Length: 164
Image (cartoon, rainbow, N blue to C red):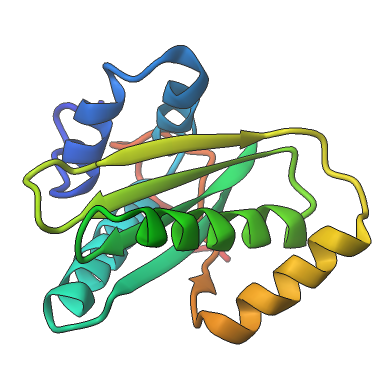
């Protein structure tokens, strides 16, 4: 269904995920569960993040909870170890704060034509941890990323209801 409902950025992302290793390709399954409106919203956030980096930001990030965990999308100016470390720190914060066992970090360097330049799974059981809580607080003080809620549970192409 998504193949017939092309949404720029999200379709490119899903095309790239088709060839990812099984452990990381699971994020594509989460995206397939998004409603059309959620996919459009995600595409809009990707576009906004990329635009912010093109205008001079070092990175722009947003996080989206999914049915099985969540993902953090980070647009970065260039592929550097420092940018990748920052992206992982933001994703780890979101994973910890949401008490999730599974989270993904998707990194998009705008200096390439690839929709994804790095994709890493953060898959381990959540447990309360003073060190993780301190890291989360430190990341929150350094980065102004945001987490959004999207409506999932319907396949793309299904009619969206407005009864919320």
